[in-house]
Amino acid sequence: MTSYNNFHNIIINTDNYKHCHYQLYPKGTQYVSSYIEARDGDMPVTMFVGLQAFIREYLMHPITLEDIDEAEFTEREQGMHFDRDLWLGVLNDHGGFLPVEIEAVPEGMVLPIKNVLVQVINTDPKYWWATSFFETALLRAIWYPTTIGTISWMAKQQVIEAFARTSDNPQLVRHILHDYGARGVSSMESAALGGLAHLVNFSQSDTVPGILAAKKYYNAVAPSNSGPNSEHAGFTAWGRDYEADAMANMLDLYADNGVALLLTDSYDHENAVKNIIGVQLKEQIKNFPGLVGIRPDSGDVIQVTADTTEWLMESFGYSVNSKGFKILPDYIRVVQGDGVNRFSLPEVFIELERRGLAADNTVFGMGGGLLQHSNRDTMGFAMKASAVCVDGEWRDVAKAPSGDTMKHSKPGRLALQHVDGDYRTVRRDSIPGEENVLRPVFRNGQLLKKWDFSELIARSEQPVPEHYYSSAIEGLRATRSDDPVSA
Image (cartoon, rainbow, N blue to C red; front, top):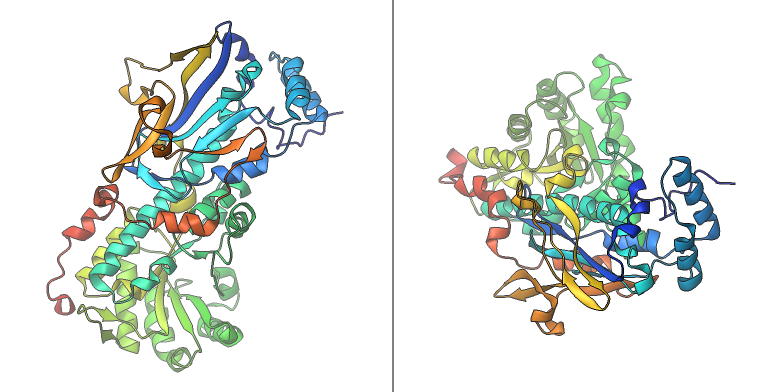
């Protein structure tokens, strides 16, 4: 009897129509080679991440006879063709593991779009259809974390640029953007994959599944930091007349933690910052053994962040750093987590700089703008067959629709070459094998290369040509910073 709950069954972790495709290839087909790339989109590069998680979670667990039974029942119930013998062959010939090899670029690598990221081929000519069969699951496993990782990486370049212009503390860059996206994402697995992708770039997160995934799939050690934060339920439960008491209570409770983030927009944000924070609780905040974050959670993200910073300076003072920008005392910062995305973040930095305020007055949280506001078309991800071997003869395969040149695919067995400081996709037989950046990472149920999370971080931070991220920081570069303090 079928269990109806085996979401790890790779035979049905696909589109229904995949089960009828094996018969569509030419007679004598022995091998099918396919590749994955980001064809076009909102960002000029990708930060590749997530493949190892998919391999370990799905491809290293063999199918069973029960999986075959469940798939047969599911597909035939819907009127879809199902060939039981194909899967019994996988079970008996290969121990239940898909007979495929996967090559990929090293995870954490940043490279321009329109380049091969992954290449897949079957290892047994009897199972030519296996290459494309699991396209649905494989493509989903790559486009989502890679897109999220790229959004996060671009945000990091914006932080780096803002800090280079107005801050004396570049060592804080990895601590500036917090993942608040768990509640706004479509599933726990999405939170896990998107969350781990963000942690390649920043060390701050409240998305527990992402932290666990980084540890489970990549051996991450302490990949994230967090601390006591507040929510409106806990503060508004005290009533409007006791808002100051609610905040004071939190400062008392979490003094030993060394951090407390206080929501200030439960009612009147300006009053809360100027009178409650800046007057009633001023001494308690100054004596707090750690960092107090002042957290506006509504309003115009650009204006409210800068306004709040200036209001706090009126109460707590400021110093002027070596670049001439005002900076709050170390014990207090603005924490902005509402309305932050890859488009608004640089605008906030621009406004801070315009007012003569250092970028490190504020730390940020990003929710739906990080983990949810994207789809497969954001980067134009696709998996396409590029070569087939029929009766011992290799043929190039390419898609070239007349109505959409973006969907033109690459022919031949592919390789990725690093030359003249950049990457380019070439034919596999056109370069020596040692020059191919693609590396075999999986074959017939075996993980061939295991990436550690520290390697992903190090690789993502390697220098890259400025054109990789120039579009993300062009607004910041256009900002004038002449005589910032008097601005």
